[in-house]
Image 1 (tube, rainbow, N blue to C red):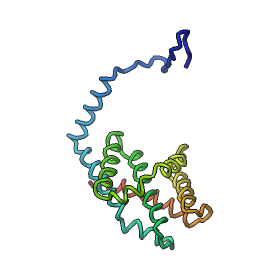
Image 2 (cartoon, helix red, strand yellow):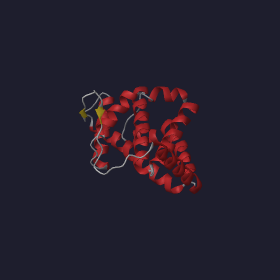
Image 3 (cartoon, one colour):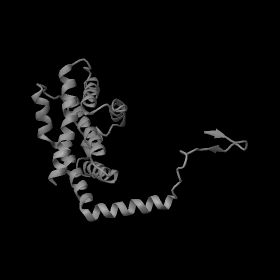
Image 4 (cartoon, rainbow, N blue to C red):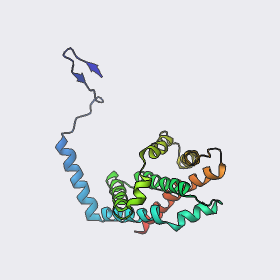
Length: 189
């Protein structure tokens, strides 16, 4: 950026890049939305989001996963587990569903279902500070396995035992489970 003499800030774009008029972005989005609706993919994304809301909030599989690592969950640790699942689901949707419109539809549907049907649960897991810690762990993506290790480390830290290898492994497993669940269910819908 550079300032010109009258105090205006100039923003430079890449050489040869033409600025697209704002109306064209909206037209393109509307066309993409209609194409995804016509193909059935928008409905599938919303169905996936609804399924994820149940998987995040009421999943016996999620609790069984924790128990498979030998953990009995106290309320605080269970909350951390659900927050991690919710974050992992959102991250997986953003990565696995294309175009971005489908991922956003699935995330919005999942969040709305939790807000509308699991309000108390939503209020306990929608802590932006925790999501920020997980987002920072993914800031420099280096592959799903390494990301899972980083997320597992954050999970263990949030549980107050950052050096506990079993908690780290559980966190990594929850992160990976979200990706596997979404990949399997997206193709099955």
